[in-house]
Image (cartoon, rainbow, N blue to C red; front, side, top):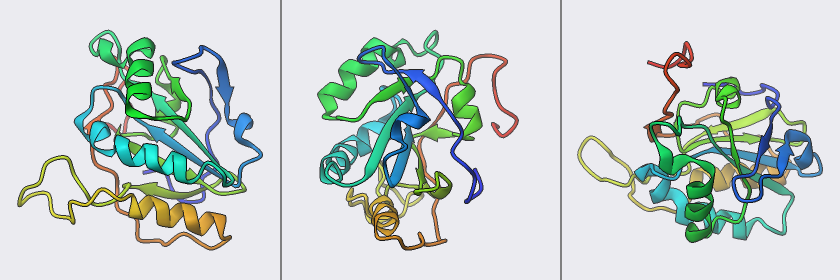
Length: 192
């Protein structure tokens, strides 16, 4: 996992809906920046999408920038290409931009491992949280403990701490989901 305190890796990627390139610097006026690696086909992303939509709505008047990044190999996963992703995002009520990382270089720079994968940066654009949205899972079972309640409590607590100028708690549970679908030969050293 990307160490806490790491500066946000730069990006300049096209928005799946508009084609407009957005960069890290476009969020410079925000106190917090949430970067979410996601994709249109993953059941874990589908599970958290309603809460992501609520978070975007609940924090719209606050100094929080939210950006999604999709980086899957679209040759093998065409539903994760920009156009289907834009349709899925609109249908899911996601109002923040989702960018397409075709080269997968940005995903590697963030050490993104799965979808969804959450990275929250504070006002100095250093990493203050990387972990789960909450302990709910799309499928319950003895091997998947947790409350089962999708409420975003872990991520919301981190967002609220940043906005209040407080330190984010050090106990952070990794996100869980489908692994990023790397292009053949592009798998990062941390994969596998």
